[in-house]
Length: 354
Image (cartoon, rainbow, N blue to C red):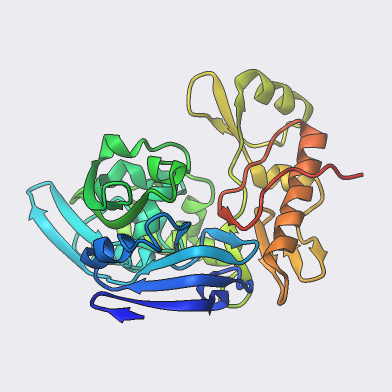
């Protein structure tokens, strides 16, 4: 079915629309190139209460089965400066804009702040849902507001930053994934800001690039991109969704006890003075999973946080492997791992291993 602003297909393969490259089919798939067509589409009686999956580039999702109801893809991709101040600019970007392209667009227009988030896969529409972060920066710091279509009221709604309830890889949108469809994100970006190079590896990469003194924001973005390229497998060559597990946040006392037993364990500040953040990659590697392979489902040799599809792994096989990894980490360290991607068509649970 094709209408003004969108096109709907039935029983559509999603193998080319997720970076794990697993086979799954959408009962209905709507490609929407005009977000103002969403009220007409989602007010249809046969869709108004249907299960809904909003799919950008499929870079933060594991399809463990076929997708019932409606899968929605927003394709409009425009960027505009809507307020150009002396110190900051307010930039609006459509949900369909590629995230890495957006980061480099901002740098090209003399704006900074997003350079540490270079080369994160996905779209602008996904960034507030996950509150994406890397190398010491979270996108929530720079989001001014989010425009989303509310399925309850069938209207576009403006979420101010505080309404988004951002947390570590979390937001109000992630907690109610079928209620709101993010259509546009507005960013308040500085024109001058100190660079953030304190995260492990960034300074060494800048030195390897021959950068002397204080680097530019573009140089930091280049260093981050080089680090990510070297550490993480390219989804175009080896199916993956980047980091599969969140870094666990635990009580400070538990972190101190683990550190006393395992001195090499990386420990970082948590979300409060009473908590600490642990390195999930270190825990998984110490449990012996780095480079592990079960048929075509495996763990990347470069990085223990990354689950990979070597060819024909199903989403269910990858989900089961993730459960066994979490079970072994919990058994050895007493630490619970949680997945970062959204799981569709299955349920994540730690599986005890012997």
